[in-house]
View 1 (cartoon, rainbow, N blue to C red):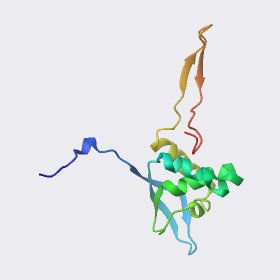
View 2: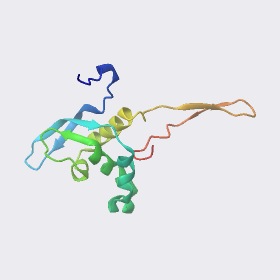
View 3: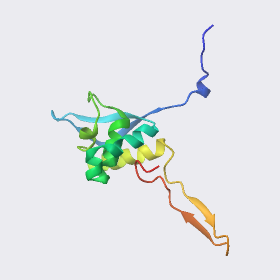
Length: 132
């Protein structure tokens, strides 16, 4: 007897993407197609001890994307050094893609003041990479 999990019960953990411009490697080859996996708690926490992030908190997103990007064309190993060489448009695309696949995108909440009943829209609390 084999244990097979129905397709409807499987969680999709890896997602394909296509960069707007692409990563240009040392030989001038452009890599546009890749994949990214869902982030784990460890992915979000481990960059916090990285010296580059401690010196410059803005580097958090670069380190995090280097951890969760599993494929980029034929680049053999994806890491923060690869991510930091992306064009700004591609970096922004990957940041948005990260937020989307991890359920952190563009969601807002609406709350009401208990005293007067005025309704307010709250910004998405997970808008920054590593800040979910």
